[in-house]
Every structure is written in structure tokens, then in C-alpha cells.
Image (cartoon, rainbow, N blue to C red; front, top):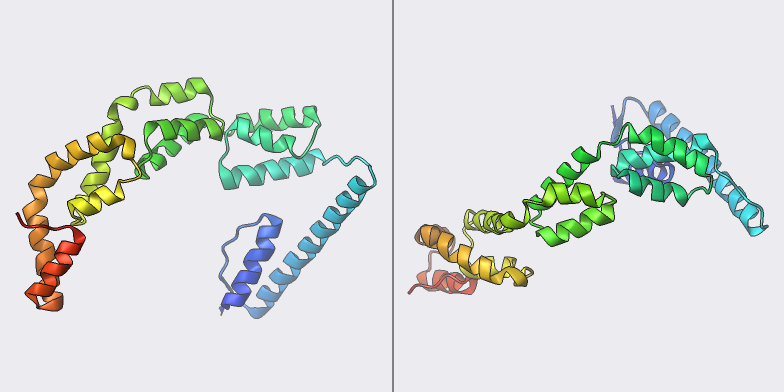
Length: 243
């Protein structure tokens, strides 16, 4: 088995990226197999570069160039595999490649049977909730992704009333990581519009764990420094205060 060096791995990734391939290969059975794969990629890259130069030359000479339906379908397939787009977003990308409306229509009809926008939007909403995005930002992102207004409305109609749950989830995750009030407020400082909700939830939830968090962090620093003065300084810097 042949493991790639970091230089070979970077070279392989660059060649594959140029061709729109993502194999994630990091080893080969033999050196011959590795050499053959590199040779194949280089041949394909050279061919693609020649095609690019030909298209550029035609455009520079004022000649029109029309991408074939086959190549357009290959592009749509790669784009769909990599980005999981909506139908609208895929159509926008196709229009950047061709002006042939019949080819665009044919491809969109094919991919409409494959792309499930309900599953796409559900997955996107779950991911954004995990990242702690508020509802208004989420709506904007969904519009930009190309989801229809009716689909967005049906998926988010109940989300406005539970926006505080996102905040509570973030606060609880920071509490479980033994963060001080000061540190939590700093983490959430970018949500200035929700400061009232943040203060309310923080006051309610943090008081339940405050003593335990203080003891955990104090004991951790005592084991590390074995110096009460140094420990108190460290605790104070992080925002842990004794009343």
C-alpha cells in the first residue's frame, strides 16, 4: 500500500478540483496504480485546458460557442452532487452556461424528479438551528438558496414563536461547558436585538447551576496552580465573582 506524501496529496486534490472530481483518495495499492492515476488526471486536465482555450479563442473572435446537452447534463450532475441546490438555483447556474432554453428545460425536468426541496429545506433549517441562526436570518438564507416563498412560509410559520428556544439551547450548551455569565454574554453579543430575551433566560437558568460551575472551575484551577491568589485572579478574569 502506497500512502501519499502531503505534496502528492495537494497535487492530487488540485488536479481533481480542476476536473470537478472529489475522490478523497489518500493511498494506492501500488506505485504503478498511483502513477497511472496521476497520468490519467493530467491527460484529462490537458484536454479540458485545450477546450477552454478553444472557447476563449472563439469568443475573442466574436464566434458563438454553445455547450452540448451532454456536457451541460454532466455539469448539472456535478453541481447537484456537490451543492444540493434548489431547482431555481440550478436553473440560474445553467443559464450562465448556455442560452439554449430547450436544453435548460430538458435538464430541469429531469432534475425536478430527483431534487426533493422539502427534504432540502428541512435539512437546511436543522443545520442553521444548530448554528444558532435567528428566524429572520434563516428566512433570508432560504430565499437566497432559491426556495419558494410558499415553502419557506409553511416551514417557518411556527418558528417565530420558538426563536427563544434557539437562545435557550445556546445558553444551556455554554452552561454545560462551565462558562461564566460574562463569557456567555460575550458569546451572544452578536445577538444584540435579543438582549432582553438573553438576560431573562440567563437569569432563570444560570442561577440553577452557578454554585456548581464555580466549584468545578475553582477546583480545576487549584489542581493546576495550587495557589489561591492565582486561582482567584484567574476566576475573576473569566467573570466568576463571589458575592
